[in-house]
Length: 322
Ligand SMILES: Nc1ncnc2c1ncn2[C@@H]1O[C@H](COP(=O)(O)OP(=O)(O)OP(=O)(O)O)[C@@H](O)[C@H]1O
Ligand SMILES: [Mg+2]
Image (tube, rainbow, N blue to C red):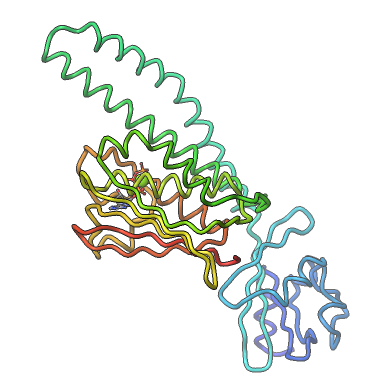
């Protein structure tokens, strides 16, 4: 045993090597003890000596720099690969505790947000009644401020619930709905008809008749948030243009003639709670694009953004598997 192999044996996480002829040339003690590699692996091909089947089938699919999740004996591992000159090294990391922590965090956020909804709706209705009855101008101003704040809080809670819903789909995502893209976009625009009209926006549609196999709920969440932004950050009497086209891949472009996003902010707009504008008129919670990013990843959609300050913004969705 070489010095390097001794060091790899000290490591708690499983590691093994597969050469260019698909032969397992080394497995550390952890890989054997955890049952991923049979003890008599030497000079045998990986499909004979690796366990479980999920690991064998992942070997050929795994790209360098990416990870695949493997569940075995009630524990969850991430599998990574590093390609060397004569072999591929496979690393596995036990992420069971991390996954449990993420799950309980998600559940806590979902439960807490849900519990906040009832008292908040009471506050909102009481404020409505108070605003209706109040005669004193100064007091009315305070009450309206409180009402405004309660609406912002409601939006935040709804966004938090949506984000935790999207995150909870991670492990059991089904892309099995056949969605007519034109009908769905039209439904979304109808939902926003009031705000589109009150801002005097023109809507241009260039939509090829296309059906896409995806998860309808997540796809709707993506469109809803992007259209919401295209309206919210638009100028009075501006426009929104939506193009749906399939060339090599299906592409959906949502262009607006709004305030635009400065270059220095662009790398951050998909982060949670990031909002460029400090203008309170926008009722910004900064969760919309974080939701979009997460949902797009699950649906295998790539997002590009082009923006010019003061001119407008374009979001381009590319369906990688279309
Ligand atoms: N179409 C757009 N035009 C201009 N700025 C935009 C556009 N879309 C997003 N932004 C900027 O990126 C920020 C993040 O957007 P995001 O949708 O995540 O949050 P939000 O709109 O502030 O709040 P919400 O959670 O209600 O969506 C926004 O605050 C805004 O500054
Ligand atoms: Mg938004």
